[in-house]
Length: 493
Picture (cartoon, rainbow, N blue to C red):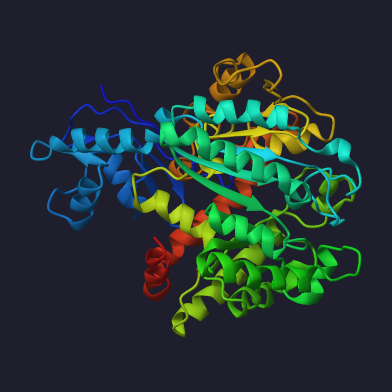
């Protein structure tokens, strides 16, 4: 007998139930989830991320095996692996291939390594997610001994594609260690031949010609922070002289001179002051020659918690900011200026491609540890930058070990990491496993531990879920109802 559950139509709950694949009435159902899009439409998603938007009555007909095989909706669902019949049994092999591709990043294991070369910083940003230290405290610099141990981890990973990112504090305050690590990695890699990319995450206030010449000679990319126009940026990112904006812009121009236009990227952080001016922030990125922006919300770590910055706006306020910003980006594109929003681009990639993304927050199981590993200045090892930030708040729940005594093999098989991965496999997590947006989302155990005291968290209370679902509903509605903006979204892939 066919097993099924009809849709639960209570507002605010996830509406999904699985069905068996036993063939009835001419076709069989393949595994899928569904969730309400609006008053009468539902989004169906399958295991590899294909999606389809259908009316409620069509959904009922589908699960009751009453769909007419000659209809457009039948052929659409068939082409996207939601059902199959005697003429399309190859769909099972195609679906399996796509699912295998979706999880292909797991075989690579860790490919992103973050070296926190110092906690020192000359900025005093009230929203800082790191518990920074004043710039004269040499005790907060990574040593060469720890750097060498961290390099051993880089060459122990089975991944052939590796990114090494130098972070802080302000990493340029310990630039000599960056130089040491780059040279040591290049020397060892001469016989190993991994594909290695270097990135320095810096506010650029202290950058010099000599530093950039080294970056040019060793193909190092730059990632910086730009929160928007001068007044907003300087208000968000105070430093002695109140000239953070001027130094950042000058640093961007200087870096482009040595490294090229595309070697410098920028990130913004949304503060309470940012919420009213998404258009001005985006216009500043356009004016400075950037081709994209990542509209990023605050995270509940470090000084962002101590100063109360993270409590000053909720998920709804940030979603309104995001939608306004996205609409402004659409207007730019409609006027002929090609510009994209990076988070939407990541989600679109997951929606229209079976290939995985490297973005840690959108992985299942959690990308922390598997995809990313962080070496703190003091030798402590963490599975993500957020867990390192949490440790600076004296919460060591996610610490995986120490460079003085652990190896890559001992860390990657650490019971704490394995337990976290087991609990963050979204396909088996309460309320995630039921969610129609599961193929596009991820699991953020550090966020949920920080906000709810549990790595899984209660999803109905999760700001992470609320923001993710709000963005996904918004994007899918645009794709379904607005051809012009839908074409723009697809063009970002």
